[in-house]
Figure 1 (tube, rainbow, N blue to C red):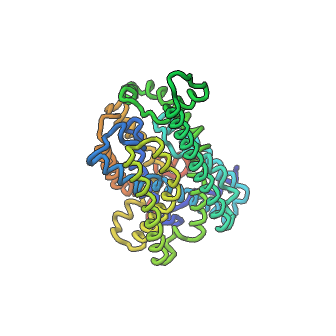
Figure 2 (figure 1 turned 45 degrees about the horizontal axis):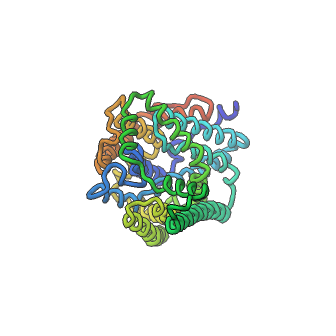
Figure 3 (figure 1 turned 90 degrees about the horizontal axis):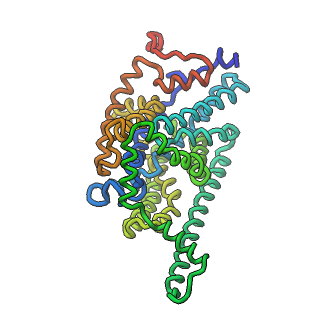
Length: 438
């Protein structure tokens, strides 16, 4: 412990990889494109017919998100988390940290777990990503020295299990639908349904019945109450997101991408050291396959008015479309970075990325004030497209303030607390003249 406190410290400016920061900034801002729907609208993340409007500009916004951003910004963010694991541990091990490498790494992850709990229960964002990142981050350390081939293999197995589970769930519900049709076809008023048949009808009704306007309005009313009432109202949802979700979805969704991110770092993909042709191939193949699948999923859901069974049908190919579209994003953004185009914007994005934890938590805090009862009570009051005015405001603010802030401070407040706790000593916070000369 004393060795850790005295000798080792976070990355300094010269050790950072600019391209990682730029993509992290893009992913951080992009993830809000999807999160805002869960933050500001009731029950309508995947079904726009429930709230926020499902026609005109509102529908176009949903289509654009579903085609380009659903799961992909989270995917980028997760890839970078995996890359960061290699960056951190390799630097410490090369510096002679030895067993202290594991000490620093696991304390960093466990403090992240606490940040996630605070984000969920204090800042009121049920869709927090820090908690599952910490859960699966605990599993990454043994993979730090794994070969690229093994990392891709394990990631592929995880994604395949998730896809097979989605297919199995869909087939199970498809079978239930056929059984319901048979029951309705053979039903006779003189013949009483068996208990098993009644149970199947109840299961189907529960699965296919959408939330009623009364339920939507009831949730809106609850979210307009005081802060402490909102906290207790969200407990059940929070518990669901932190128990069932990691087990059923996040392990295939998050852990797999962390491993791919580790492989990408080892392949120097995020360093910008591959050829433009390589990145263009990532872009072309990724978008060709990914957007084709996303278009198919979007079309069938629109064609069936977001029926629960059709949404589940689209989920069968979700992970495939998401994976390839995310790869397309990586290719596009790396070409953008290597081009040097819009250098001022790139510097601002890098600054946003360096303050990723602070900016991510800021999203939760600001939207809680905007949407819930002790703030402006706008939960459920805006149309879907209007939510993006809030995003635009947050983007502009973070792109402007982040580079200015970093002229005076080495870390964001959340990053400073996190690093101080991780390394067991108070970290330097203010920029000193000597730092500027370096």
